[in-house]
Image 1 (cartoon, rainbow, N blue to C red):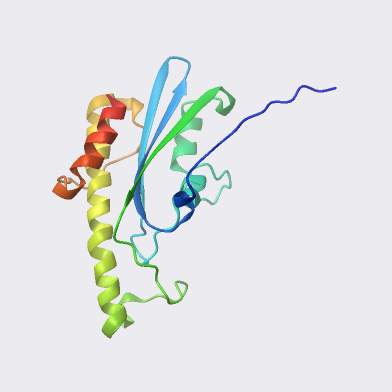
Image 2 (cartoon, rainbow, N blue to C red):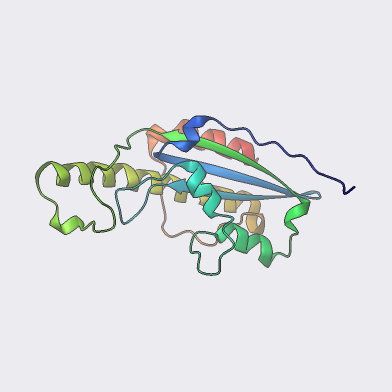
Length: 175
């Protein structure tokens, strides 16, 4: 009879709901700790997929995936996935209003009236969440250097005051 391994993963059902969020992966390999900061909220479409959907994308092993930056970084460092202990820290951010139109044919320039206003509200929050993510990546890179698995910081970002608590909690978990 072959040996079996048992693992358990528990999470809040809120991680299944679409919405804005930031998250921190803490990956332990032997005595080393690696960190990855991410967010939900699409740059091009009024879509903020559930955290679980976004998080699973980080480990998508298909060659065409554009969302598996974390997996690529782990493989680049030649870390055996079986030897890792991975912890997820997640913070929901209010302000997402589910889009009621098709996303496949979405064209921001073609929106009018209430749809245009709804999209503008989406972009305001999405840009603030992106700014928070970029700020947090910068902080983690400054503290942990090459142990921060995020590739690059796309822009210099200032912390949005309403997200101080989230930023402080995340940075405390990296310290």
